[in-house]
Length: 314
Image (cartoon, rainbow, N blue to C red):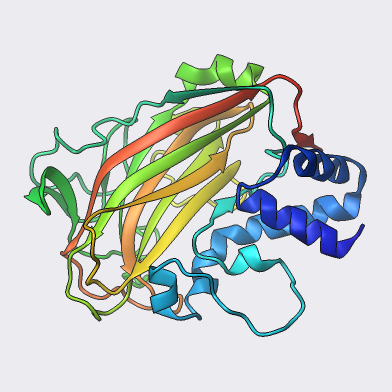
């Protein structure tokens, strides 16, 4: 395996800019080289921790999405592991999107009340106990920031399973059943979802940094298996994708759309959507006070590709 070539291909894959020839090359490499497969799995899993890597760099560069300058050193996991703008996580290596196919189909998935028009006042607390229902940490539906109905994040909380846990973030969740697209997943050569959300930090400039998160987890089985069992252990999910954005307030241009992507294997049964905001400091630090951070217009899209498959499988 040519290490430099592998890193170039991995970076292009993670940044969704593979050409057809590069995708075919990466797919062949993963099929035939066990060392490449092991390295790809390790590097892909690392994407779930991009936010920690980004914290050590200039907040101004991160917030403005500028390329970050790094000292000369071995590439390690590649430049992509240090860019905040990309966060595509694959924790199950069974199915990896490594090539383009001939026909692409795009359809909206059912996110119940993605615009929060049906929510009145406070959101239900705790992790959802049913599909297609928003709930989570303290938040409320309000009219704010030029929109009729948005959710305002009110207070960070720790994990309910750990009573003394730090109050690191305020998160809301929804469980999405995938039975409606089961046939598409089984027949497609490749599939992934895009989760988009409009986010807003209305604090004055130079406020204490906070980090927004837009994340989607994919699980097999039925949604009943996740109710009352959150957060999941690392081996429960088939994969996840996340996007993080650090802000110190003072944003111009109003709302910012943030997108996370996640590969869907054929046996995907349901998704968990997570939208939140909290500490942008070292892991374990409490979140600064919240109340001027908002989310609106949550959208979920399924993309499937049919034709000659470039999917790399075990």
